[in-house]
Image 1 (spheres, rainbow, N blue to C red):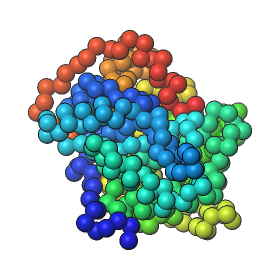
Image 2: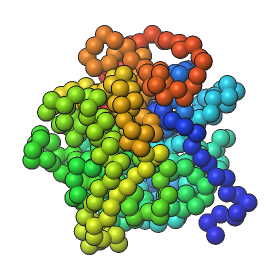
Image 3: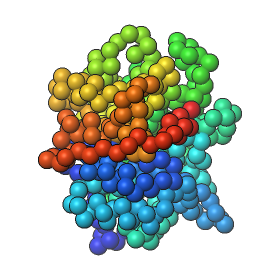
Image 4: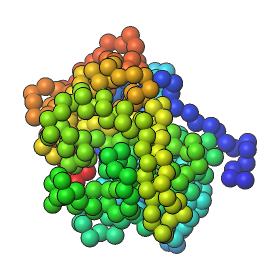
Length: 370
């Protein structure tokens, strides 16, 4: 058995719409986090962790946030009776991929042991494995062993009752193509062909290869550098029209041809993500490199769509940028507040404001991918 039945705690997402948010690398942001949750955030992705071999053993390593601070924040949220889930991210841009000296099952047990040793264990984990600035890095390809490790660790975690989510860059789970490979340094001959940091449905493989129901949320990072979202906006489509058509296309499903001989899943596979599991990821990054969407544009697309062609909600990078200027403007932006205006995660609460953080912009672009 994976865990003794008496030890399994089944974690579930909050009911209804989701407003999720990432923390910055290794940050806790006590007051900002509590404010974001009061405004509407009900899933927090704490950032980040790595799965490394240390002294011959599997170890959950940093850059972890201050876990005592995380526990304090969680107790403050619980004291206010604000229903919220807390997951730890695995990966991040330029981060190492999991050490494949150990299987997915071995990694799950190591992670579970680490997690249960915390003052307040996490409700699960969020996969955010990505590429590397150096195009020749070994972390610009997922090894076959790593591909299987993610599937297996996720499956064991789900069977043990944890939440398991993924946050692919848009090209890592890409409705615009049926192609697949394990590389993260692909280019696109039709749009910025000199940009070599694209995926080809590597996360879609994990979705398809894992047992049905393994993943609780799929957050598509529409703010990936020169992503299909930015390409579409560059072509002249409006933000609202793009958001609505993209969600409809993604949720209606498509077929991917898996043809890597080193992997067990082969052939044409229909990809179907239910709308209850789709989040759209947004951020402060701005054109011409990053697609940007104001909350009212997200609202207009959401409200114009059929219910089955809407995402469950949205996730934003990151809490530390709340109340800073958006899209080269002098308008301060809170995604938590703006999303809650139409998703109504939190109700009847007077929304507060905090001053724009000084120099917050310098953190934006080193954190957004590439």
